[in-house]
Length: 199
Image (cartoon, rainbow, N blue to C red; front, side, top):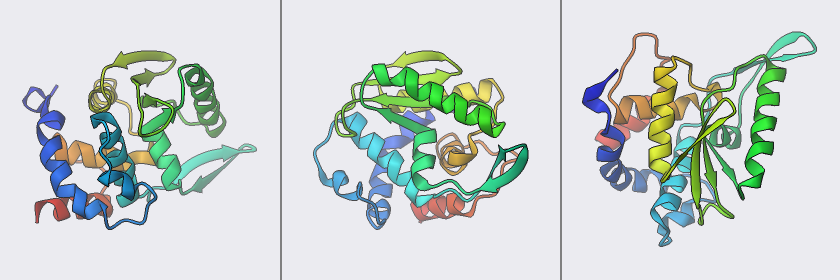
């Protein structure tokens, strides 16, 4: 669909980390101190994605159905992080978590969106990575590749970004892939972060 930008995430990620580190270190988050630790590449990337969710916290209200009535709620930062990259401690936890995720969407009247899954006992020790599309798991060998595959699946299948993590997916679309669509939601935190990175 967009052959000119297929490798953009990998090409731009190192310089992004360098520019983003001092900006993200100003956030109030328990994950900040992990940026100074000598972690494996996937763990460091995971921390960056979690902090990006803090920097661009959810602003879009998510519609849900309760007792046949529709209402709106604002997702928390943790919900945003988990709908972008779901961290589970072991392989056996994946099926249960995906079933919970599907039930949640069914009860809300929303659809299951492609999801990145990171497996490891802690966020500092991640072992395996998957992209979940409905009930099918696609195994990939690193977190950044999982995010790239998930982004492309969303676009190829023409589904919307999950509203809980709309900000972070919109940022990835605009900053890394340089894709701009006329129907994109204007999210101020996304444009502010991009501006901070280009100053």
